[in-house]
Length: 239
Image 1: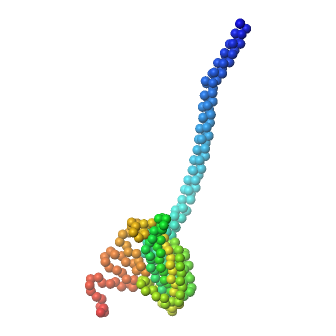
Image 2: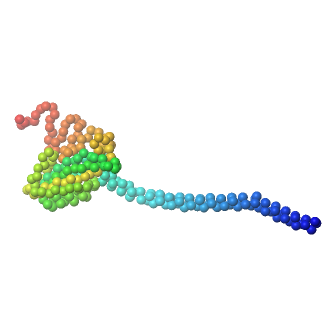
Image 3: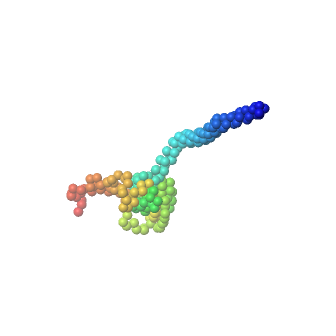
């Protein structure tokens, strides 16, 4: 029995060591494993944040060019229909191309099916020589404002323009007449008929065929530089 005592004591000691390892060492190993997992997650987050930081820094560097691109897009597709500015652009194109006759009849803005913008389908009539008409088309394609030509009709000058307000830009022998259907755009999706008015200033009346009318005092300024009296009197020489 005395010889077995050391063996029993050794076995008990070994058992105690195993139990101690199970109670003390193994939990610590589990904590070490969790800490390693957290460290890996933190490192992954650090890599992701560094990538986001680089992206933001690149965006900051590119911000001026991005702002210029946004400004160009807003010029091409403005936030309002802005028909007076559009008429001035077209009148400038007519002057530069030296056409003999120019008229512009804007249509009512119609909201696109996507609801993100409105389309202003317009009719433009110009007459003059072949090269003048060709130059006018080129200027339409290169306007600061986006334009989509949907149809072009060219015929000998003399086709009727009844019912359209016209602005002559010169006089020359009759040559060719060109009628263009062109679409302009605005990001004001509420510009369509029956919709809630958009940010366009209230009270402004869009020009039709080049005549700009301001309904501020009840008078209308004609395009030939004269003013019609509104007090009931007649100008000298009037019948």
